[in-house]
Image (cartoon, rainbow, N blue to C red; front, side, top):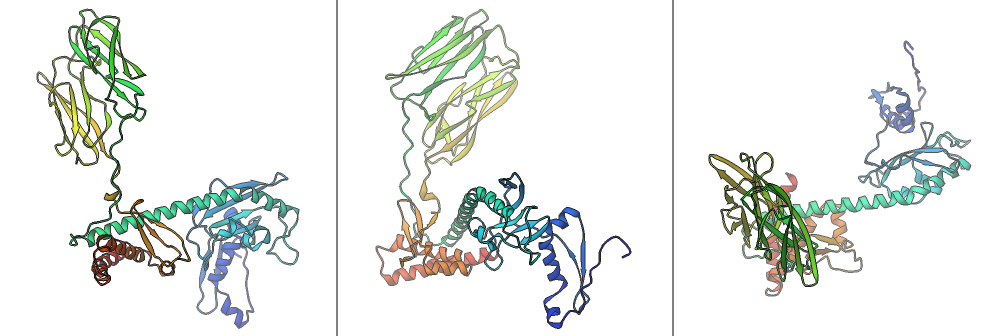
Length: 508
């Protein structure tokens, strides 16, 4: 050749062989058989087919498909030798195009699939999920043929080493299969929820799926801890500041019933008012200094303690920061939450005589008082769920600043507001296709029913499951009051609206 390389000519082919051999088929064969040699050496192979209809094919090393099992890159045999692994989970493999893990020696494939070996006829190799290669350079080939492996002590050591990881890989595959199945089911439920929503726009007489009544907000548990708000403050001599004790249970719910408070101040740098109330006021003395504010909260035999720091200074600077405490909190629909504003200068000293105005979305709730450093937010019983922002606007002389807090309005999940999920319940000896379970708010589907199996084979699972939801919805609404003929009419009514939507969404 004019340049470095090797040229191989295949000549004298019989007519029957010509029909079987082509550049593309030969290229696919070499891409599998010498994949690692091509990758390791960087060698390039080009096949020129001079038969009628032929052409040129550039051989590329066969790529593996799927999710790489990066935790399994090698195993060590009993003799201390290393076998290199490159394994992928390919969940798209089928019986016609199975996933294969080849056995390689020094870059050349000896066995196309580990399941061809009797010694490895077990999971995970037989799951038709794993794709990739096992490379072990110490293997010996069979004397009679280049492809094949000798069953000697080296082979036995490799089989034993692979056995040490097979159970772990099998568990990982099945866990990932479960996750993918749940993701697919969730996507299907979301798809059907949207389709039913569109189809039922003009079917106002139907009541949608209803779950059990939502639980009431939990009653706070026994006293567990208490927090003083704010935890520290610096105030000007002669000014006042109110500290608030927030007793909670172990789940951070406010405890309000049968609690008593006892406040303390040490050293006495000012006066303490309201020693036995939830809110205690400190009136700073004339001299600068530092002190600890303490509170003991009791509920029967239970008690909780907390402290805060107060610093008295001679004067404050210009308004610099407005902070709303707590900065992030949760409030149930129909419940309230206390909020506090601190207005400080650059050094964190509280500035007295600042006018504060509280603002919140009127759709979410109201404040007990819209002026003052402290306010109580009362959430509406029908407030939108999720995050909302409350603001405190502070004004002093010609300066105005704003602080904010994020409140998450929540409620125990109202199951009936969601589209019900489905679960697969394999019962091959039963004739039922689906059953509605109102207690668990789930549609049970018999995955072993012939109709379900047929839908899977034909790629019509979405349409089939949609039909089952429609059937159960008609039975929920009219099953106790209608004749069989009327129920069939109702089912046609639903499906005639539902299936055009599904076909349109699927095609889109």
